Image (cartoon, rainbow, N blue to C red):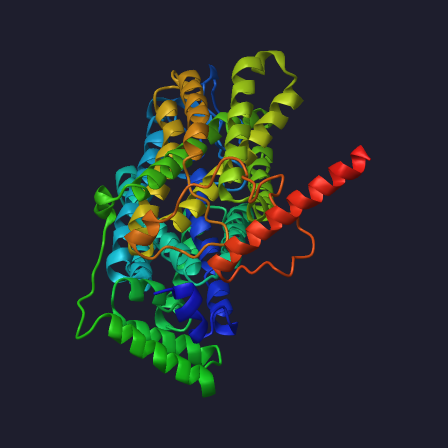
Length: 553
């Protein structure tokens, strides 16, 4: 059934209650963002100095690090974390010198936890629902968040951190999909981008929270407390109802009708003609699946038999991977500024990326804007590869900021684009794999750090080449601007690629005059049309002969 055009309006559409649910889905992004970006503070690698000389410690991921000498540190190495936290896991467990490799290893494991969390909870969302996916992730996240505060050692911290990251990814994915499926086509982008602003708000809020907490264990406790507030979404069904779109697509008719009744009552659509229309809609839904239909669930493996959906998912997953993997190439140049400046420069570029998407995407379309930002990302990357040693520092930083902006826009738009291309029945698992690829791209830089930066130049070259390659593949994507979300695999296969160039709707030179229609012209009858055409030809011929005779005279 046409959910956006026929089902959803009878439940109030994007009425006051639906708007409230969409707005409520933005707040969890702040809590999840605090948990995600806390990794940069927990594993900050401060500069270190021995009484006999520099240790060679790395300050690339820790804003505000300073140098000290101290004999409290094994081997007379002195370390001090960045000024936002006085105590990190690096200072607590002495992860410097010969133990320095444990820092990038923990970062890799944490991102891999997010990757598996996206995949696992994406499958949960498609099988058990968006709300149940959130509840299961929250049940895992709350006790593990508290357990992290009491980690006795590095190995236990890393193991708990992996599962904790997986649970956070499940919370984010559940709200992202549920929010999207509530919005009408014209408002999907704006509602999703506002959710992105809340995510960035958590990133910008983190330094202030870290200063207040001082120690990483206290900060982890504060993040766990913020996650505890999300239990209100679990206890109050009105704050996070199940997606009626998913229920209808998977043939869970009784639950679908119950949720539609909830939305219609809360939106004030429950009397008169609206009530009669809703009852007739329920009768039509029952007639589509006579008897007692069994729910039908899908997974990402269902894409094997499709022709276009898997191709679109592959292209957007590849683009997401590139956008995430190439960002460290730009962030590395910003680290030369030192202090807290690189952190806020990257956060500011992400805010500008969201604003740019809000302005351009609904006007030019998803495919054109994604193509533009991908080209811009590749251009900035190639400039840094070829000209870094010849550029002034200010110019190099400006190019890096622009590249960071465009690469973040590529990631955000690719994920949003994928959520519109993938059908409802596999949106959770499909989007989970694509978001997982973004985590894999992020993990590529810690992998290089783990190898003592021996392959950073090759990493930059490979991702720049991938960026150019993805430009060609983006031309195969369909345009989804102001189109209804596909709910079934058949509808997903129906999304076609638009033409590369605009085509004229009619000939440049009309065959007939566009003036006042003649009295003997009748388009309703083919016979009369033929007769009228013959009369017009004769009259025009006679008129032409008269004009020729007058000219001869």
